Image (cartoon, rainbow, N blue to C red):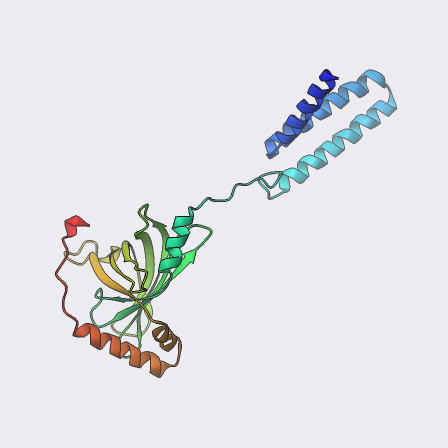
Amino acid sequence: MATQRRQHDSRVSLIQGVRTKLGFFVLSVLVFEGVLGAVAGVSTGTPATVTIVGMLLVFLVLILIVALSSTQSLIADRVPLSVPAQVHDFCRQVEGYWWSSGANPGSIGFLLITHDEPCGTLILDGQGFDADGKVGYVWHSKASCVSRDLRRLYYCWEGNLRSTTSDNLHEWREGFGEISFRVSPDGSNSADEWFFDAQFASEAGGMKKSADLQRCTEPEVADMKGTEEKRTALLKKKLQVKRHAPVRPAKDEGAS
């Protein structure tokens, strides 16, 4: 009885171990070899030949099915990415629409931050507008990650800048940057941003830019998504306020 139990446990362990295509091939070869030996020992002549050929055909068909399948595992045992709950909470806190000002004089940025739940990070999609409501630049993040202290976002970006001679967005740019968030329970959220533009990396003073981020209010988001008249009026108001805002002292670049 104990011997039968051990044999059963051994078979179960063997079957549970077949989780990849290579494991399936090894098991198939072992089964085919065992059956082939048994048939060869008890049968001769035409019946044995037919049995062996039939088994070989079945074996080849199984190999083709598994080899051509797109699955990497024979069973659904993939472990999903584990993202800490604190990271999701941080991403939910900062997602939404933000104003970005200071990086480009005469324009203001409208930034959408989206929570990428499967990856546990944030997606950035931004636009820049002038006082007439024209789009000056469009950009988005290519990759991003949240810092361990759940206060910063590091990202790589790419986008297009409007030409000075036309309204076409054709000047391609790319770079990387960082956003440091200051999120408070009362909703008065703000952030500091700096980023590099690789296009100007060789120019003195032009490679690193900084910006102030302020969360948009719900009425402001509604106006930006509304008619052109409402959007233009809001942009002029925001740019007017920024133009008369006090200049903040420059930050120590070495401390960042």
